Image (cartoon, rainbow, N blue to C red; front, side):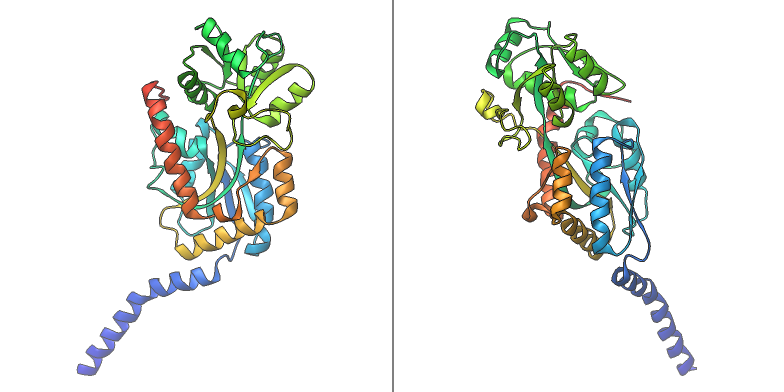
Length: 330
């Protein structure tokens, strides 16, 4: 009887240990199948292009393909929601950024917690913006443009993608920093139509991505006042920074990083992080990112801790602006 009871205790203990042993074994062998990178925007856009470049670069370190899956809609909230509900096994991660993991927080009634339902993996790349205007605008530089805005309160128009869009939020910060007032003109089909109207003189200005603005600047269709970064763009070294142009400290960088569902093991996060680091160490990957206006973060910033710190700092910066403007989208 004593032997049987002892065997039962051993068997019970062994059975209880099986899930833990299984998790350890799984982490050691991970990955054993393809991994999905969810891009919360449509195919062909800047985020999708960036995601595909990085996914291709990660394959070598992981030994498995990284498949890009577009889950567009509602300013990226659909894609993030899909990953928040995914199994925390390392086989699904999301390409998140300033809009999806910061700005959407106070704007949408999210069904997930931006800080509580995700684990940061790595920063990937960033991109500044350009302050551009119609070519017929009398202002010759940023200082004159700000003066013109002050002389014409509530008359000038900035093209945006809508109340919850990146352009509107940045426009609100611009108003605050320059003590100006202007109207926002929403373009539900994206900034492509807005750029056409800007080139035609039907809009006054935009705060836009270099990849879409620079071709119009070079064609002489619009003018550019400044880039919203501390350093000049390598692809447009003649464009002054906001510090040089007269609006010091107006630094706005869009950024992208990788996130996994909460509960993903540290060993799996470490392997995904190492794959991102390996991809961004490839000169060809960095060049391809630069060609689309993206700059890979320095090696020392490619950590989960750096991504978490940047997201927290951005929340502290942007949420009060959004809440004070009462921007809310159902």
